[in-house]
Image 1 (cartoon, rainbow, N blue to C red):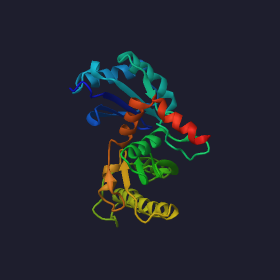
Image 2: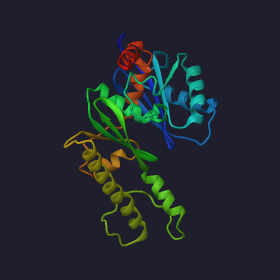
Image 3: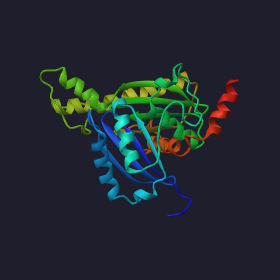
Image 4: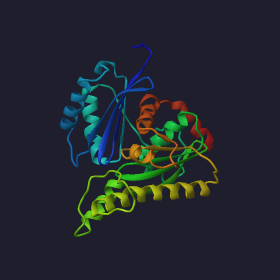
Length: 273
């Protein structure tokens, strides 16, 4: 390993899954997807992470930075405690205040989800100015970047959440495996549910992206997909330009490595004067 290469552990705690990634420099060398439990303790987190790192391509002692993004507030403290016990360096928790001076258009910037900020930050650091990110998890978020800042977006139910709502509220419809049916006009209830979920989601996705572009006065803008359902959907709709499974982790990495760099915030204060 190069002496100048940093090794960063990035953790993205979502409502359904937690994604853990290890970077050597800018490259993801290991990643794991875990189930996010309703409740957890630092001992449980420690046991899970220690087990993963034991078989990693990066030695635990070589990890130089740790970043954490969570949309589950009750998980923040257990993760910090476990990570700092396992690797005795400070954990950078992503907030609106340490995103490298990222402009956030929300009147209350604290209300912006950390994962959404990470998606935009990752693209800004690649040199993009305008873009749309569709993050397909338990909820599907549309994150809009304009002139290098986060201007907002929208949130709709994710595919799995929609299935849960449908089957919980109906007497005769039961949960099904979510996979593409052979045709949109289904000849059985299970495929009818699948067709409605997947083809219906794509239609909603395409319509909303079209409306976002119109509202932002864009004819063309790059559209990225990420999240657990991103790969499944991206290959079946022309409205997604790029599928990037590590986009959120990349944003977390930037905060982990440079979130304490005062120069970003000095520039921001000068702009506000």
